[in-house]
Length: 334
Image 1: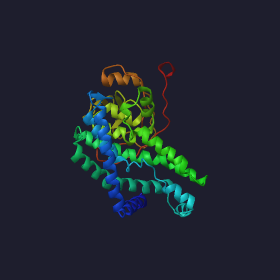
Image 2: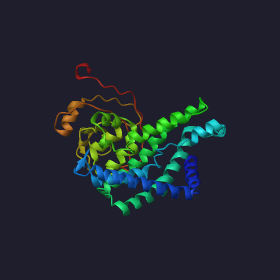
Image 3: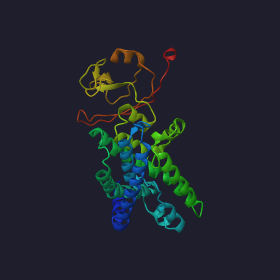
Image 4: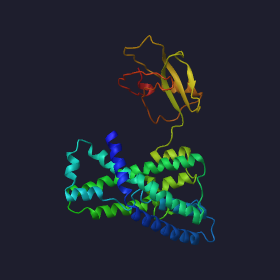
């Protein structure tokens, strides 16, 4: 991965040379931010909230989305498609690197530059002029940064596809313009998704574009956290509880261990000690009965099964091999 980090750094450094263009961009973002603030101030005349946002929330939304525009490449980036059309891509294809990761590194280096040198100054100007809200909490601030980084990755992944259409056409600008329009609208850069009619909002929230603007801003404002944030990021409900089957060095089989951070994660020891190391061992468990033993209540629906080898808490190293895992209903169990 060192080579891709070096590519990202070079991409970041390349954009450092365009100081005048970046300064003009900061002024432009601040100007349009001021226009949006004026519009939203008028919208909120005579009403306290719209779509769950008050006027200060809306002002904060404007400042943050203007700060994220370039980092998320909301207006598109045709560097890849132009390289394909001009034939420069031949050099990239001949390099002993992964083509996808190479261009991901270029794009994420660019995004990091714009997040720091376009986003931060735009936000500071907005903070001075319009007094938006500060993060609802430290967790909201950290969540905002993580969501912004995730949004940059989502933006590249989606834009990579239409850019690669240039391999089959001499002009990919049309499809890229369409893609940029979809991103701007469904990400919430033009109008907050909170303002959308219920049906359109439901569609927008199912698409990945919300992660570019609407999701980071709502996390920043404290509108999304915990289970709601997990659902927004993954599209899935968080598990109500997690039962883990473990091989433990010190506890006896049948012991229940409650996670020190949350009582909704509990471990059931199925094997202990070193007596059965270096051999295949088969286990058959009644998941419902084990759950009731660990939690003292009936389980809900089973939503997922995971397998992991984890020894960091014991500060040791280990190696494990796993065979087939089957799940059967009670009536079919042997």
